[in-house]
Length: 77
Image (tube, rainbow, N blue to C red; front, side, top):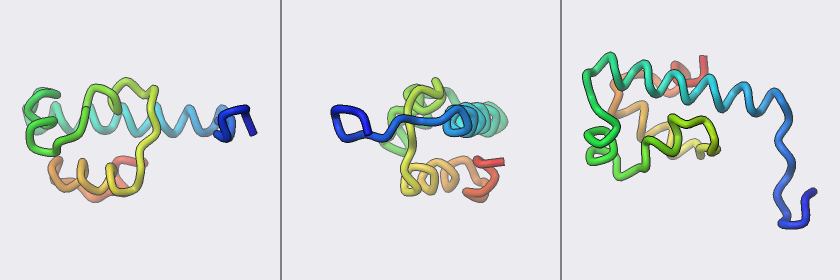
């Protein structure tokens, strides 16, 4: 573990985070929503997650999928 108690992410973790980030953007654009509009609906900092630089909890994925009208697993594909 790193000095702050956080486990170092593997390359596979980064790939998954980037994939989810891309899917959030894809489904958001498909619904013709801006990041700001989705942020207003969800209360989440959407740009933070679309950047692919931040992890998401299952709760965050669930909230986003609900407002994007997709199943949660679709964000992970």
